Image 1 (cartoon, rainbow over the protein chains, first blue to last red):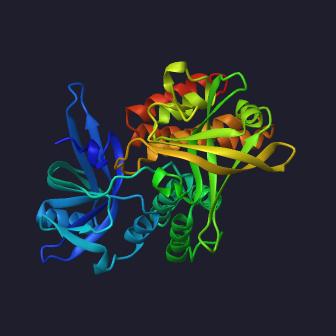
Image 2: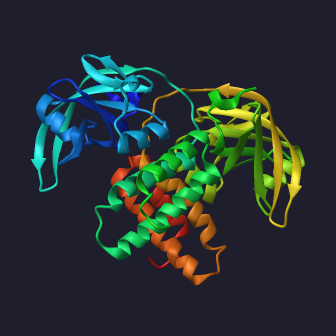
Image 3: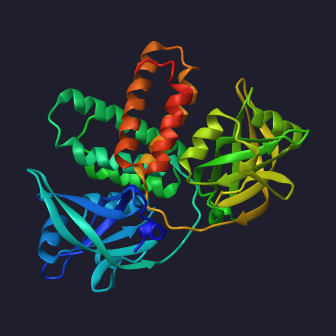
Length: 203
Length: 203
């Protein structure tokens, strides 16, 4: 099953991973799907899930996850810092997925590595649905939101003061890019990010 | 004419702008198309073209430019630092455009501002063709290439040593992101960028 047409290309594809708990409660989190292509052109998909995350707990319980391909900056930020409300979700082959995503890929998973901080799973696609194709020019603001959200999730894990200062400088840079290049969806995402996470940080 | 379906959304859309000289010679350069939406929902498109650029000379001569919407990191880097060879181009309503782009938009232009460094033009779409719709997950490597290319074009314009040091730090960061997250197209683009531009820079 070639997932390139569903938006999952070589390298790391930033998607919203949706999972469900053993009791069926849906969860969503922004996560990278790793795609490696070997010399014979075979594609392998992997994901690293960090210990302590709901996504990992759900995957250990159900061995299944769905990748939701989307460009929506607001969904990335909300999925990172809050629980998405039920009306974001629909069901695809018995898995919770995001109604507005451009594509859904349901994977089964096998743990192939465990480190102190994470499990690494190899993923096998079980079902794919392409919901909406589009043309979209690159917007630097969209990626600045993604980079800022990643920084934000790391900021409180870092204890090194110099690294924290560097992170604040980068965050200001990303905020400037969003202000200059983003559309209203990117600006809304950045303001949610500030609201959620940077309240306590002195900029 | 709503250009959102052709990939030109609110904010700044990073595209390859193709133009031709008075004698018909094609040119391509990565440029941002600025889209503003007012409270009545009307969209206006603008572009800033810098003095000394071939794109500006061509637009002053012909009043016309084409926006080529693409995700191809290699094309962005090549268009920034070399002349694209003729086999990249085809013709759409009498304008040179990139054969492999996902959409073409031909605009006429009217200069609305002149500053020391640039002209600002308001753009009016004359013709649109959507060539290929797709689904594509966000790849941090792709945008890292774009950010690195922008930095590269600015590096030699900067005389402030501290700013240059900061640019080198950022460039290393972007190179790391491409290495970690990019597919082979992003990695190829980054290696062209290093080859073309950073040969003389001590990293």
